[in-house]
Length: 278
Image (cartoon, rainbow, N blue to C red; front, side, top):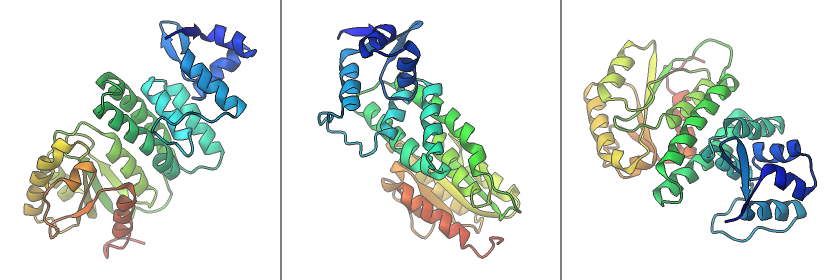
């Protein structure tokens, strides 16, 4: 496929090089960096020109009602942290709140990355690169979820053992912090015993949230739920993520939340725990 340098694209569009560079950094123009040079393929340039002139894009089978999250997806798989952050900053300046950035931008972008990796559209290197950038973005967004006031109690969140994805628990932890809960995020690859020990040591532990993203994690999720239930911590246990729907879980031991919307229900239920401080 024929490609052009970014300077050639700028000349073609009749704009300054820095204007074309801004198009790339904000996700409006897809480009790939080869060494020190940005390259734009013919299809990406045509798509940009069509959007700029108001021509509808052809149906690719992937529908994007608001393509902001899709532009974020493109910056993530390109490993372009500055460009991805620029998209988020623009969204925040347009009155999008921190939780909305997670639900409307990062979650659909990362979901598509997972689907495209599973279907062979992108390779594992792209997935790892995108995940690394997304984790750094969540770190930069953390201050948006900090609220003053006394802690209402502690919630422990973790990914099950063998699941190397740290992003879901990090995002979920931020949503809990917004409600003034103290959150202990144990991150990726957490064995049940670590969850149990942490819960026992925590100040006013209210609930535990486990997440498993990969389908292969269903069996491990079942094992961890059984181990945690056997510890008799006397606090609610919630599990979420795509693998949760595949696991054979006892509803007497655990509440299953398989979608982002259901996860918010979990937060509401923590809110209503009798031990929660006002």
